[in-house]
Image (tube, rainbow, N blue to C red):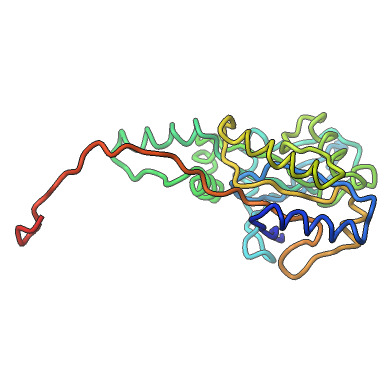
Length: 257
């Protein structure tokens, strides 16, 4: 499981798109929310009843060897145990996350019992997915969005956007995505996602720009660490004004304040 190359300016996005267009002039793109969570791959295989059954769920691990979290994935409501699709196998990749409300509920309960609070939803989601007890994972309310089809039949391995819409039509939650052709459309979609941030019930830390055609992706390939067919635009950190309400002074051991 590879990571995605991060870029921090829109000029970098423009340069990347122009580089891709120089090789594939007719190329189209998908711009989608970059969920701030933990990546997980789901492998489905046909069982004796002709259904696609979830056979393995893995985290990224070290990139080459993942961590088997199948037992915990099975208690995440967004992860389908069976898919009624006429395929022999299907491999999906997505992001496991925790909603703001589930995170606040967890910290409220921790505070009542005098236990340590979680720092942020991402870390709590990652720790929850690795729990040894699936019952604990289930009660913490993890969720998941699928953001890519990794392997599957030809009909879902042509257009990424069409594949995402196909999965959504079959009850699989997928990331928000928008199909774009020009640089201006891509920048507009990135800005649109930025405006959504405050209204979402989960954290995002950027917008991913991907090549829509799986065939074009295969031609571009990947480096040892990142695919050449996608980049992630990272939004600047959110800034908010705060008001200082009070300063408490305390004497130390040597009576110094």
